[in-house]
Image (cartoon, rainbow, N blue to C red; front, side):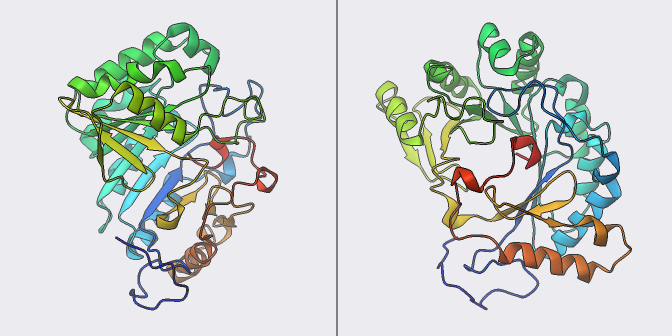
Amino acid sequence: MSYSGTKGSNALLQSTLVDDFNRPVDYVRIAVTSSCNLRCSYCMREDHKETADTESLLKIRDINTIIDVLAGLGVTKIRFTGGEPLLRKDIVELVRQAKTHTGIKTVSLTTNGLLLDRFLPALIDAGLDSLNFSIDTLDDNRYRAITRREEFKRVRENLDMLLKTDAISVKLNVVLMRDINSDELQRFVDFTKDHSVTVRFIELQPFDDNQIWRTGKFFSADKIRALLQSYYPDLNPVRGYATEYFSYTQPDHKGSIAIIPAFTRNFCTGCNKIRITSNGQIISCLYEKKGINLLPILRGNAPHSALIELFRQAVSQKPQDGKHTLNNSVRTSMSEIGG
C-alpha cells in the first residue's frame, strides 16, 4: 500500500483508524508486562526499578476489550510484547482469546525465549501465528555479558526446539552492536540456509538506561548492509515490509534476511502501528513523550465509543516521521514502551 502523505484525506472509511497523513493503522503491539527475566545492557540496568503497582497492569479482560474495540476499527494484527510476555501466566489464554475476535487475522508474540519450553505447544494450540525470538549472540560468554544471566544453554535449546516446528512463522531478532556482536553476522545468516526463518538485524536504540548508547556501540543499517554485501555478494534484494526496510534472500537458503533501521527510521512514512503499554497508555510513536491513558475509561464502564475516541485521538498524534532527538525521550527502557 502506498501513502500519499497528504493531510486530512477522507478517502478511507470512518470505521478505520487513519492518521493525519492518510496512513491506515491496522497493527497494535500490546505490552502485557514491563517485567523481564533478563537485564540486557541495551535495555535496562541490573537494578532497573520495576513498578510495584499491579493494579495498573492490564488485566485479561482489559486486553480483550481493547482488542475488541480495535478490531472494530480495522486493526487486523496483534503482537504481544513486554518486557517478557511469557512471564504472564495467562499468556496462552490471551493468545487464544485474541484469535476469537472477528477481524483479527494475525496474533504474534515477541520473546527472549527463556521460558519458551514451558509454553510453545500450548501457544501453537491456542492459534499463535508467528513468533519473534530475540537472541543477540550465539556465544555463551557473550550472552552472559549482554544479558547478565547464565541462561544461554536453555535459550539455545529452546531456539533449536522452535526451529524444529513448522507450525508457526519464526523470526530471529538480533540487535547488532559494534565490537560486541557485529562479528557474528555470518553465524546468524547461517540459520537461513536450512530453516525458513527471517533473521532480522536491528539497530541499537537509545532506550537503555544510558548504559551503552553513548559508548560508540551503535552500528547503522548502512554499515550492516555493507557488511552483508561484502560477505554475500549474491544477495537478492526483495521487497521489504513494514520495519523490515531492507530485505534479502540468499541463493540456496530457505530463509531470508532483513535489516530494521530502528533508529535511523527509514520506514516511518509507512508506519501502520500503535503501541499500548502494560499500564494502559496508548503510544502512537516510540519517541512520543507522553501517551494517552486508557485505564479510567476502560475500567469505568464507559461505552466503547469513549474508547474509540481515545484511539482516534492517539492516532491523530502520530508524527509523519519518528522523532529521535534523545532529549525528547523520557523513558529509560524499551520494556516501558512495549518492544
